[in-house]
Amino acid sequence: MLKVNNVTGLAKVSHVSDGLSNTIAYAEVAGRPVTYEKGKIVAGTPSGAGWANEVQDFTVGNHGTYGPAGCFVNCSNDNEIYGFHSGGANILLGDSSVRYLVESTGSFTVGALATARGGESVTLPD
Image 1: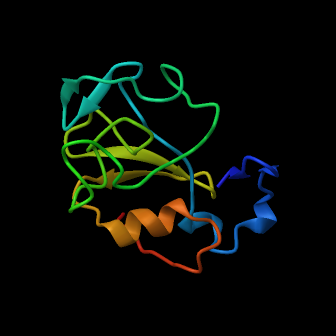
Image 2: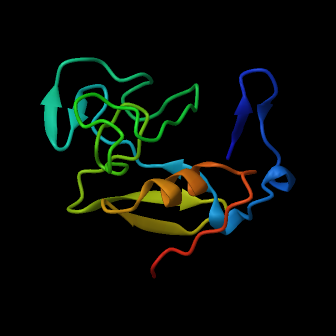
């Protein structure tokens, strides 16, 4: 939500046409600077610092051996939603609510939450 692109920089709240409760502002990406996939340390170095990525890029299903087929939360900590919690990771939505995103969350839901202006609306369980 906060980064439009490398040219224009930060987005304004008014640019979030999907609604603040439908858009991720920040997502948990635990374990840096070590690379993790599905709870195990693997070779490689994730981009960004130990706890933050100044570039604010975010990917969905763009990780090593676990591929994009069905794994979108807690798959890899290389710019993806990743936590050491059992079964999911935390996200902060634009409306300032913190939600727990379960590992079984599908590609459409994660992709819709990751975009601020895609025209998608999602319903997350309470």
